[in-house]
Image 1 (cartoon, rainbow, N blue to C red):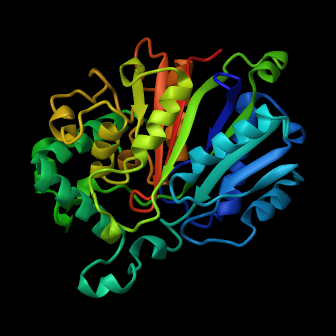
Image 2 (tube, rainbow, N blue to C red):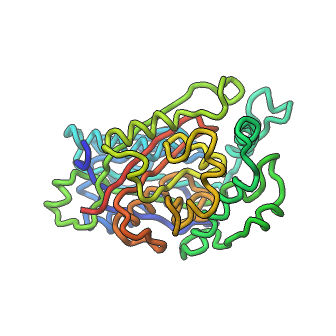
Length: 376
């Protein structure tokens, strides 16, 4: 399947605080923009895949959205893997296109926790909440603390990741948060839950994003000259909650990344730019290790010294990621990957030919990986 399916169009809303907007209206706006970017009509689309909104899950959300868009897709529905669902939907739709189940697919996601409900992010997690395990950050703090104890990872190394991604986001005119930080400012940011500071944590954002998929052959026949090929994808999942895991510093991102790289026929050293899911800085660090960019346990020192900044060896989250562009999880990273492969990014990596994108859900429960190549 390598290169047989392409991302032919991308679209998004503004990111940040969007009062009065429903997730359906946000999805429609992003899909409309993605179709316009591809230069095709809605009537040509015969598949629609959507991640249900995290902040307010809705039964049969895929059908609700299709009805609002005036569509009756052959293939469609909602898929939930937390933040990993977006890349998984792209992979599923790519396989459906490859096997003739549909011809042109829309994949989209919208949420409005900034002006709506934040309950999904703030709720207690099981009986352990009575002992301090309260809210999403607690699980990631546990992972971060274990990494520090096992490998000597330091707070400043998490800070280097935050500094790099915030630097990139500050140069993105569409980012929700356009404020670079220094390592000294990172050290002064307040604790959320030790060892995670405010600047280790992603934003809470309203917004939506969408992509259009079709076969490379179909894109050529339609004269689409900015289509970006999908070179590889993969998934990995654990069924165990954090407290039940035997190893807190190893995740299924490893299986996901290796599957995608094998499909693409590439190794980590062949990747020019990375869009890594950064709900927390520890997620970036552990994913870089899992993908083979850094040795296991060495993601902290590997990320220092500007290595992941725009001028470095592996620029990461060149539009600002979840820490700066938008906390709306996952699909915005694909959009920036497409812009990089088109050569159209605001902060363009020179001569970039390959981009790896990661999504993950829960507390490192689910993981999906996507590898993109240069536009055709």
